[in-house]
Length: 391
Image 1 (cartoon, rainbow, N blue to C red):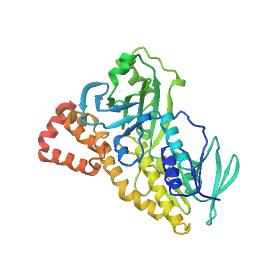
Image 2: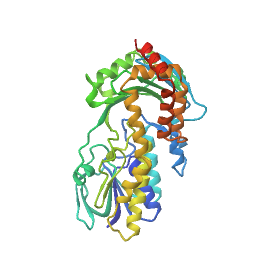
Image 3: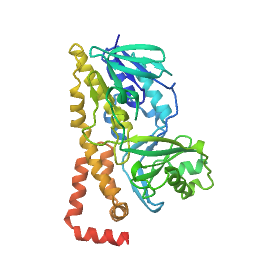
Image 4: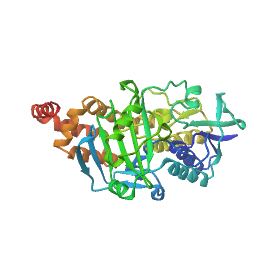
């Protein structure tokens, strides 16, 4: 019997498996795909990831972001530079394979191309029904993404409050790609309760869009095609349906989210641990995988007693406050996008302040506090300018 089975070897699963194996536990990792595999994702990670990893990821970073070009409905450009790296752009196929290899190097047994069909927590252990037969472990970590079988069958999760997203990897000439190097394009207002983006990668541009599912007035593909048409750098690009990949982004929907039961934990996207403002999930997948490893490792260290309450406590202490701050940003920015953008145009330093959140040098809660203080000081002036800007 294994100490732990990790289902899903994206960033959350790989880091959970890595941490447990590094501490001497017998770990099996399972993924339905074979690596490297394509993963539809913007692939942008905030640089605060450097503060939580004990190894270097530079070999799988395609581009380092030193600022953002903001647009509103593909117009009114505002460039906000940074004096330090704020994000890394990666291809998920390469990045995820790199993390999985790190886990294997620590002693994780990895079964690729194996699908989990069912699972049962007996109270004494967990048994998985897989393509290669039944497998048992003392604990299971579900890192199998939004709607994964572990969360649905063992925790009874009903995944909701998701963003719908589309991404396409687009080849461009060297001059166009070079013009995007070191920055991202982020366009607010092109889709309700969301944004569109262009992220430079090693061999081309990742172009995408995401919006809250229940706020969309038409098909997300229509918003995406309209955005692409407005980008001068993509003039002449004709995207067929096969060039556009979609996925759901299970954003944080409150601290009541169930994340463990008995001998089972869910982490990363499977636990709705995604920033509801920018939709970043990679950093939080990595960190929640580490937290899951700590919680399961502690339970195993006590003789394998099924006490995983510390996992929820650690999430509530470290990650949930950041998500709550991001939820406040959602209400401001996506609720009043035109007025918010006018504020950014008048005072781009607001976004430079937010860069400190992306680098981990300031908490989201402190950023919100600073933002409120700016608005409250002279509310009539701010509101009058907002109104002029939205006329």
